[in-house]
Every structure is written in structure tokens, then in C-alpha cells.
Length: 495
Image 1 (cartoon, one colour):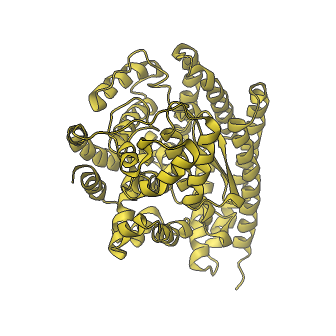
Image 2 (cartoon, rainbow, N blue to C red):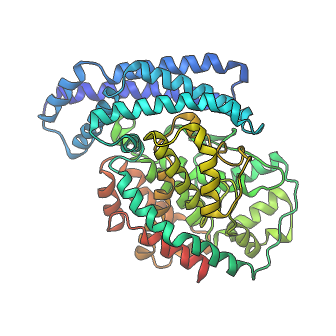
Image 3 (cartoon, rainbow, N blue to C red):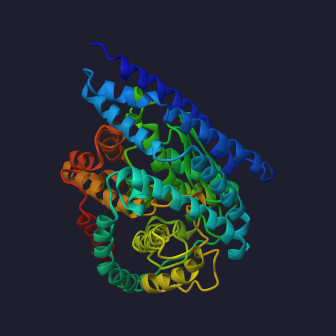
């Protein structure tokens, strides 16, 4: 059957994918390898590339091709791909090229300055750069809102979690807020009766890197299709054919780096296992960032903090960092599941982590909707950290409102995805246990294949064939159900 319009669109998206590949590598290099004096030139180059990609995604003839393709005899997968092509086209056309380029440039400059301003606790120096990022994010929200009819914050969140709305996030997070603070107290009271040995450092960076590589091998990373590097903030980038993950190291504590590597490997394995026959097409993209975070948190929290997983990690830790009583499996598991409200989100335990996300969501939504300004962030941050976690951040910007790179990179609307991802991950593991009641024994025996096989079949290989609620229901038998997350935390930490 003849499908000329669809075939034309297919080739155009292949070209977009190849150019985005180069853009992604340049962004990775900017964060992991580039000398500091190269940032301005790289920022200008990335802005130029962003403008080029925007031109290609908004070419005038695309509308006619999309409309014509809709009338062609397409397969179910081709129709799903066309649906995603139209979504890309609509969001791209909502934004003027000048805004795309200005946003890229401002974000690159802000993120680069953040790397030195954060350790210096320099909120005053960071503020003007952040103001510009927020100004452009608000303009982006306005453009997307006018095009889609969504509210300002919803329009930004829809770029990361298509179909999710702030009203639903409010409902889910409101429920979390009602029981999470008491759960944190109950778990702390229970754990206060336990004795936990602290590892004795220092831990050399090279030894930690070797440990991270061994952990990546344990959880199935394909080293012929990616690599591990170091950056100021851990991330996963690159493309499915060449996934780049990064971590950061502290010589006084090896666990943040180790668990960060396992977290990013969850992202990486999703990318490495997207449907290969569709690479270069929107159908082969990860469906949403909430689903992406469900993979990283499946690896880091559901699996990485599983009591039996410590038995697998313990010999690796001992091999690379030397023998210590603290590295025995039972003690290592207590370290991995220690609940302690603290400053840093990326190092937070599984129970307190959602409080960090709720805080950021409430602040960034108010910021985008114009209810607050950048100058208001520190006081709000201090108040919410005390309310949600009982942690005092007054005057401590580097461990407070400057700790994350997201706002300086213009990623407004992203933060809810982390806790949505934790909820999805709990739902995945509930579904895996229903289909394989021996799962916990499998993990204890070092057989992780049942986890990876289920994720590969139900999430990774699906790409964007289905919209999120349909994908979640097909995988687990129901749409998002936060009750699985609550049940998981209660079972792991209070049973």
C-alpha cells in the first residue's frame, strides 16, 4: 500500500534524530569533558544547533504531510508513530525560534556558572542568571499554553509527562503529604533500635569508579553502547546507540556515587533497550520522564535497596574498597535503607525522597505561575524543608535551593516525574511479584533476569506505542495507583 506522506515524514524524523545525536554528544561533553573557557563558544554552538533543529521540526510543509499521512493505510505502529510526530510538531510550532535559541544560551550560561557558584554558596551571583532562565521558562509556558489551552505549569509539565496535570499531581502529592511525615518518624523510631556500623574512609575516587563499573555490569549495562564519566551533577544523556551516564564522587562516603551509578544505569538500560527497529522515530522514544524515572528508581530503590541485593553488592564493595565489618551484607543493607532527613535530594533515602520532590514542585509551580519571584525561593525553601523534613537550611544555599541543576537548565515541570516514577516503580514490582511469586528468592540467588525481562518486555520495548495511562495499564493491569508505593514503604521499613 502506498504511504508517500508518511514515508516523507519518516525520513525527516530520521534526519532530526541524527542531528539531535550530535547535539546530545556536545551537551554531554559540555558537562563531562569541556574545559571551562570553552563554555561560551559551546553555548553559542548549542543555541545554533537548537535553532536548526527547531527549523526542521517546524517546516511549513509538515502540516500538510501530517494531514495527508492520517488518511493513508498505516499499520498500528505507524499510526502511533504519526501520533507522536504530530505531538512533536505541535509543541515545536508553539515556540518561536528566537525563544528556543535564547533559552538554550541562558541555560548553558547559568548551568556553567552554577558549577562554581554552588560550592561557593554564592546565591547573590547565581540569582541574576536564574532570573533570566525563569523569565524565558515563563515565556515558553505562555507560548505552549496559548497553543495547547493548558495552564502555564501544565503546559511545561506536559513536555516531560504528557497528559499529566497539576490537579492530578496535587491529589497524589496531597495524599503523600498526609501520611509521609508520620511514616518518616515511625521508621526513624524503629531504626533507632538498630546498630549500624559506619564505613571508614577515605575512599579513593579510582576505587569508587571501579566499584561503579562493577555495579553497572551486575545490573546489565551494555558497555559497547555507553560509558561512565564524572560531572558536577549526575545525569544520563547521549542516545540509545551511545548512552552516557555520569556520577560525582566524595572520598568520605562511597554510597552516594555507587547508588547514583545504579540509578543512572536504570535510565541507561531503558534507552539501550528501546525498540531498535524504530530508532530515529518518535515511537522509539521513552514515553515520559515519569516512566524514565520509574526505571532509575526500579534499579536504585526497588532493587538496589532490596535486602537481598546487599548480598550481591557486598563482595563487590569489599573487592574494590577493602574488607570492613561495615561491608557485611546485613550492615550494608541497613546503610542502604537508613532513613535520615537530610539536605541533599540525590542522596536521600527512599522514604524521605518524596518530601524533597514535593518541596520543589510547590516552589517551581508558584514560580512559573508568577505567584513568587526568584528572590522568594530561599525563604520558601527554608520553610518547606523545616515543615517536611525538619531540616534547617537557612543561609546554606549550596545544600539548599542551589543543590539541583534543573532550574538553572530550564527544566521546569520535571520534578514531579521523580515521585511519579517512584510510584510507577512500586507498581511494576507489585506486578512482577504477581507474575513471579519467587522474585525475592530469585534476587537473593543473584538471578536478576526476571526483573529485567519484565521491564524489557512491558516498558522498554514499548517505547511510545501507547500513551502513558494505556502503557501503565497494559503493563500492570491498572493505571497509576499510588497505594502500591505506600504499601511498599510500609512493608520494607515497618514490617
